[in-house]
Length: 114
Length: 115
Image 1 (cartoon, each protein chain N blue to C red):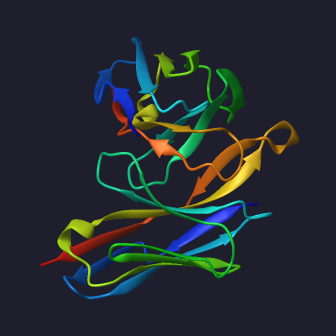
Image 2 (image 1 turned 90 degrees about the horizontal axis):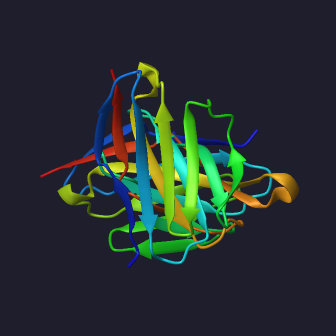
Image 3 (image 1 turned 135 degrees about the vertical axis):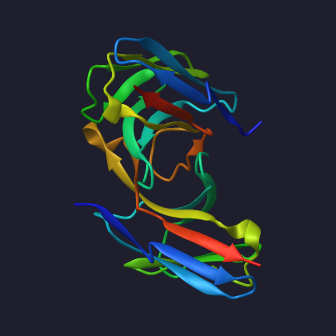
């Protein structure tokens, strides 16, 4: 199984809502990532988890709250988002978090904030 | 500052018309250069990793090459199903003691192959 599964595929939320994005992998990977991708732009790193610990936060606003309950799961909790947060949110995993590791990406959650 | 520039932004080819996509980069100590394919509304799909100048890798109609300053993705006799955005990324190492992966992506080349 070389798959990263993300749910939901699409999400529409209001600025006062609280929602969560979920990501799961069963490849035994110990590093997991959240990327954000705006239309026709490249993916941009948000967070890195290594061995279930938050290792990198790329100065992401606190309305995005990541969580790694175990080595296979990664969540992104959303609260009080702005319309400019509408984007494709991608989860990725790699065997480790060191250099030379290739990332496997999920299909993403297309988020629209109204 | 680590940077990746891809050209052209968009490329339209006829089926069977070979061409090349360019990725130029500046990075302090290349740990790896990656090529990904991305279909609309989907996540990037891994194609190749290149580590050192002179290295080449092939997969079906695609061939990736690497020099000290740039990488090329050669597409030979493309088919309509090769239509996608092709992303190039370099690997930077971040964090305390440089222990963590960060892929820095270029803006991509949108390839359209017409029958």
